[in-house]
Length: 183
Ligand SMILES: Nc1ncnc2c1ncn2[C@@H]1O[C@H](COP(=O)(O)OP(=O)(O)OP(=O)(O)O)[C@@H](O)[C@H]1O
Ligand SMILES: Nc1nc2c(c(=O)[nH]1)N=C(CO)CN2
Image 1: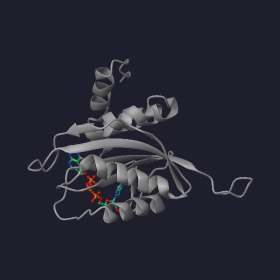
Image 2 (image 1 turned 30 degrees about the vertical axis):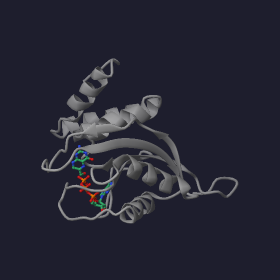
Image 3 (image 1 turned 60 degrees about the vertical axis):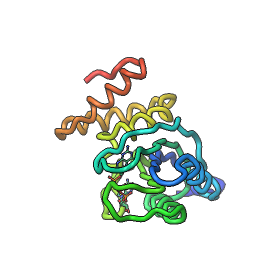
Image 4 (image 1 turned 90 degrees about the horizontal axis):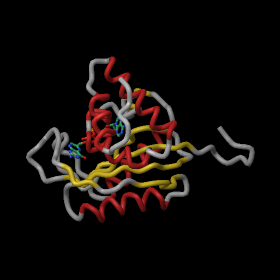
């Protein structure tokens, strides 16, 4: 869709970043700079940096994790491909599932788009199970009430589907000393 000035409309997207190989904080900054250097992506806000124990495949070094809010004129799959291109440039190799990586970029949310194609599922299907995603994400969405409500709705939906999303989400909000959401 084009705006009145014929510029492509921009949407807000939220991404998670992780690194547990090499110069981790430098790699995260490089990934953010490479995103922001593109004319079709602006980095709007970034979370703090969190050092986290590995989840899933545990025999690997600790991660640095963070999250960022972007504005972009790219469609969701185009944005994912831009992210995968930056992973490749920064030396990401894919061997062990959930194994060590120089840089991992996951697309968590793209506006309120829900989609499930082979290349891309939105919202990210495992985001609500992962404190290493939700805690940094909370940093960048706390001021955004609409988005906060969107993640809350996703957590409730996950609970209905038998997941434990809302328990983790409530715990995180509790630990951050704000009122937990009603279940
Ligand atoms: N929301 C999404 N964000 C990022 N990749 C996605 C998403 N949905 C589907 N994918 C697909 O998943 C593929 C594998 O991604 P990746 O190697 O980063 O997985 P992983 O980080 O090892 O595990 P996880 O998907 O559990 O985070 C990507 O090539 C991409 O096509
Ligand atoms: N702590 C932590 N653990 C992980 C991470 C990550 O970014 N942080 N990424 C994984 C693959 O998506 C698997 N395990």
